[in-house]
Image (cartoon, rainbow, N blue to C red; front, side, top):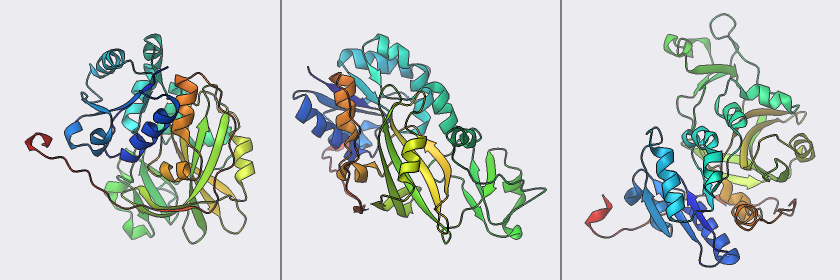
Length: 325
């Protein structure tokens, strides 16, 4: 059976495109990986894909109908979203795609909403027995250091770390888009990204913590896989997550002196640093192809390589001719 995958809002996700190409080449020769983007001629991922399509803006009323038509035209088996703004819309329309023969690898709307809206995320962690940073009232009971972050932000946009009262400017306090929490300092905590794969029934099939050594523009640039002491705790807590599908990427802080974990956020999509988990042995794209294209079961996987470090660097794609821009 030929398998075709569409990666939406592909942008710079060239490595992810390559991982799906490799999986399809091995499991379903003749299949293709397509990439969609608002400006595919200026997208490195689109240039590396087997085919590319210029999509309408996500907020365009015709966006979903356009994707449905493209999926039907190219016999797309699986759609993989990559950015936060895509998630809820695709989750809301997942059944429409399924009725047309295309699987969107996305969690249920309710779970996507809890992940996307940072006001709801602490309750999500609490549901699974995991603590979150203490909320702070910046006006009446400020607690320093504190962190202010957007309700639905990503990539560290509009993020403020405030060490002292004189840094708490009025425009930050009165910004209705910001939430305030106690800041968990790096001298007392290690920060981990945890890549988790859930099968279509919400059962956890893999969990890999990655130590965040350095970031750039909100995305990890240096990272290392670590079998942290609390990994069994995390596996137990997330052994089943109602409505979860595919890749969920969690952010956690582990306190040095007692190993206590604090859940910061969850993204219902691939994280930018996922390629490290894949290189360590956890091949989520292969599992997606097996599960959603070939109707195979995915077994639990825990044989990933510990202490594998990834040092990311910039690469380029060259496009010759006047049509690129």
